[in-house]
Image (cartoon, rainbow, N blue to C red; front, side, top):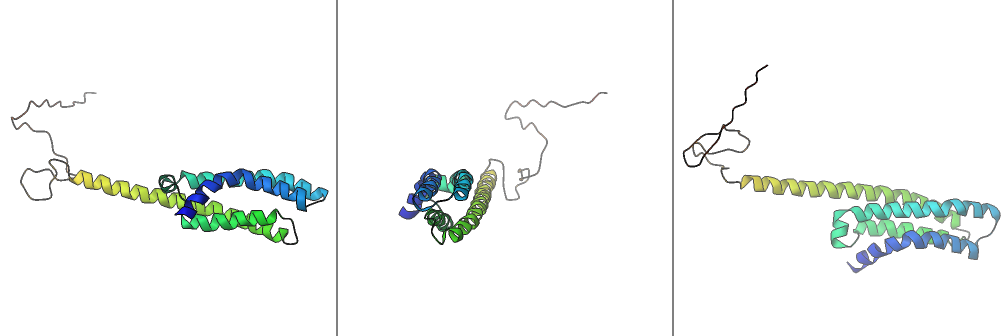
Length: 175
């Protein structure tokens, strides 16, 4: 749980730190004009994509409630962020890390969307089960065969049993 909570906090920091690392790494290890032009494009894109994935992850109710990522998030986001860090060293393997970072970024986005939809569906199922349970406990609802007892889903006309004042208004349609 400690690792999941630490990565929960880190992912918001990573939205800013990792694109900056790409620029700092280029200044230290990189060189060349065309690479600088590529860096001008990559840094904002990395910032936006990291922010979108972090937002999709933080929107999930279970993540907000637990203040921790799921283990799937930990695996995918860790691999993705480590590949971005590896790209920032701009060595002989920078291209491989860059391609891996792009693929893992796409995977991280779709995993975040999938988990958001799944979590929402599970929450909806739990809410509907609770609603159905409470509806079954309503006064007048019964499961047995007492004559005159209300059954769920059956609409009965109002009647006057003499215990309370009842006002019945009938609708008439005159054209």
